[in-house]
Image (cartoon, rainbow, N blue to C red; front, side, top):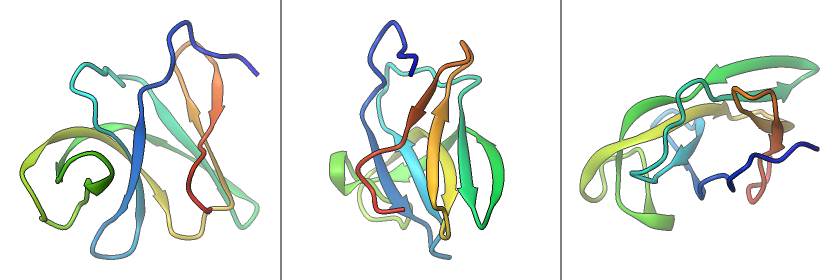
Length: 102
């Protein structure tokens, strides 16, 4: 596996009101331009870009439901039926999403 020159920023998970899981990079110094999440579910593969979105709360309490202070963070939808997910960087490297039961 290829690893980036610098460690990936810390990420968290949150579900929106519809139950769709999102990967959230809540680091004000992070620039996730060109980043994607590759999601595999039911033998299908989808690539979803990271985008700037409004999130609430901080740290492990970050959420998409309005609890806590609002601010911008990088988010990408994983979905609710994913079997696996990887972060894809513009340099071509691929990194497994860890820490959440998919």
